[in-house]
Length: 95
Image (tube, rainbow, N blue to C red; front, side):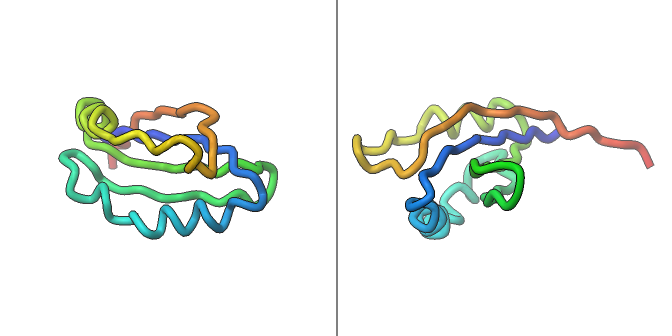
C-alpha cells in the first residue's frame, strides 16, 4: 500500500516564483530514493494561499529513511515555512 505525504507550505506572495524555481531545479533529486514513487508541487489557485508538496512513497520506512538523511538548509535561505504535514494511505479499491 502506498503512502502520500503532503507538506503544507506558507510562501510570501513575492517568493512564489523563487519557490517554484527551486523545486524545478531539483525536480528529479529524489527519484532514485528507495520507495519513492512520485512528487507534485501544487500551486494555490482558489480557496487556499498555501502550496502543497505531495509525495508518494511505497512505505513509511522509505519516507523516514529519506527524511532522516536530508541536509538542513542554511539559515536565512528558506522562502517558505512548513505549516505541517498531512499523511494518507492510498486505498487499493477492488475492481
